[in-house]
Image (cartoon, rainbow, N blue to C red):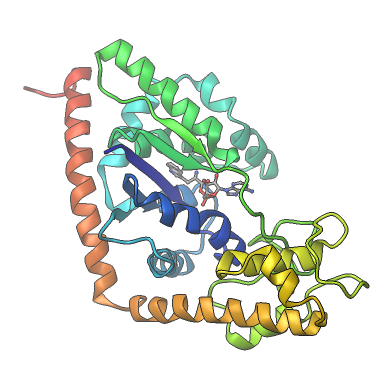
Length: 327
Ligand code: TYM
């Protein structure tokens, strides 16, 4: 079985857009691959974080992912910072990576411009990412287009290491998420629903209450026509609500157009709000069971035990090949 690996930084809030665009496809992929899914908390600290907030967010993210259907029996789920061999491997890889290569990364160029006092961690970020990917010989790395260059760097680093010290790493391939349904902001439906959006009324997060969800959907921007018809260009608000509804239920665009042919926008919005509330109620029920439970700790303990052993073996192989050990 091929290995798939992906990581998520615990930053911001998880939105309905993230759920439909990234989590649902991951839930589908877990059936076909041996999957490694981790929270990239060490990547989060490349920029300033409030320690208490970060700790809470890490737990929240893991609980939410499991609540959304990432199955701990099918995936190896763990916290990056609990596997001490990952930064150790990263150091070994840093010493076989050129400064020029790291400083050419687009994310580094953009982020280092935003703050004159950026950390060295921002430069070595993709090398830590290479360690994340290479230690377990991942075949496929599903990421957004913004991380493609980093996966390609991991491939280059692996290939160079193999040439210098003999075959050690598998060369990973990025798996770029296909253009699936993009969920838009409810207030500005020409823009992507984003966790960093200033107007929270346009964004539904996975832990919004029933009242918040209803209020946000009922006040979503639509158009002055009265027809419920899918037309992303001329009716982006209504089309976005249709996309949300179709993604979370058995409805299709056609079935919705038929069902609401003679109904008002109000009726349609009420229906969409009901679909979203029902879906998120299920996720939230599981989330609140998990968040303070020992079950969550047991899942992470099991995950870390497995990955630590794999990473330890790779680390030993690398140090040995590089001439670092006594034996
Ligand atoms: P993070 O949490 O910032 O992003 C998680 C995933 O979402 C994708 N993504 C996007 N895709 C398209 N458009 C966007 N605007 C957008 N924003 C986020 C990201 O590409 C990513 O797939 N560096 C990683 C975390 C990581 C990782 C790894 C991933 C650390 N080590 C090893 C894979 C393998 C990141 O950006 O996380």
